[in-house]
Amino acid sequence: MTKLRVGLLFGGRSGEHEVSINSARAIAKALTTGTNLEKYDVIPFYIQKNGVWHNPEIARSVLDAGQPLADEAINKAQLWQFPSQVAEIDIWFPILHGPNGEDGTIQGLLSLMQVPFVGSNVLGSCVGMDKIAMKMAFAQAGLPQVKYVAVERSQIWSNPCVSPKLCDDIEEKVGYPCFVKPANLGSSVGIAKVRDRKELEAALDSAATYDRRIIVEAGINSIREVECAVLGNDNPKASVIGEITYDSDFYDYETKYTDGRAQLHIPSQLPPEIVSQIQEMSLQAFRAVDAAGLSRIDFFYVEKTGELFINEINTLPGFTAFSMYPQLWGASGIPFVELVDQLIQFALERS
Image (cartoon, rainbow, N blue to C red; front, top):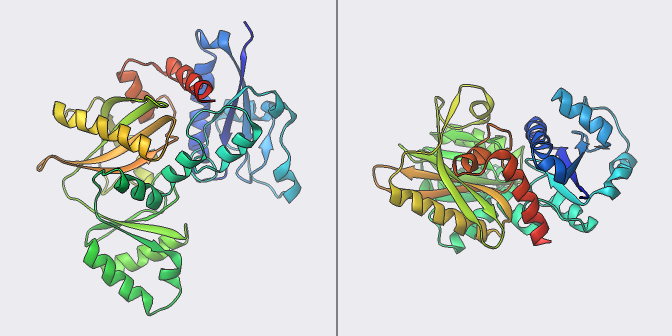
């Protein structure tokens, strides 16, 4: 049997570069385990933080080391040079987290290559990445969300007279506590929890350095943060529900990626009717942004009132053996090795 040549694309120009390397290592191992070894030939490609693509030999050395290459000065011509082995790929498995990886940019390039790839297409990726566009899609689908205000960088920086009025509007519509987030960054980068006007002004100014689009969301007390994984294309299915608990004020970047700071509970101990509701809402969210292949959908559950609020969709979630997405499917009866195989099959099906 002829093996399918899988281009494992990892690294990328985002703050989640190291997470991408760890995800790629886990996927590479899974694709060379059991029956997958007979079906697939893994050909890795590494995109350095400066945007340069590296050939499989260098990519394998990065996977072996588990560490990124040091950045170096480049000329623009290097950004348009792809390793010759790119032409040999039968299907791409991009595992690039964050901007330039799950926002539709790399998906557009792979579409132009006319080769199937794992995950959402351009539309699903970019809508799922931009928190403002995502919330508009969720609202259109009738999914419950916390109160929020969309803000542009120009409103924060353009005129000293604008900022007080902007903060007045946020206080009236959202109130305190609230969360200020760049619209297009993943892994809780640039997010701040604020409790008064001074903190709000500082958080808006900080978020504007990350993105020209910012979102301010109402905070809810005594919530449980629960997540559901979705797998498939036109007839997707939802996993069991997981829950995250942590010892910090909120689930920020440091908490997310520091060992011992956060705990995953799979499956979460929830009433059966809440589990069913989360699963159904997850499938609705998946369809609302036109996702494909895989997604993880995050919710806030207010146990006291029984309310559920959808928080966000992640169309290319972390994929290490310890990440929530593969663990949710493991608890749902699909082990890691089988999961990566299914994702490739769904990508072929869609193409």
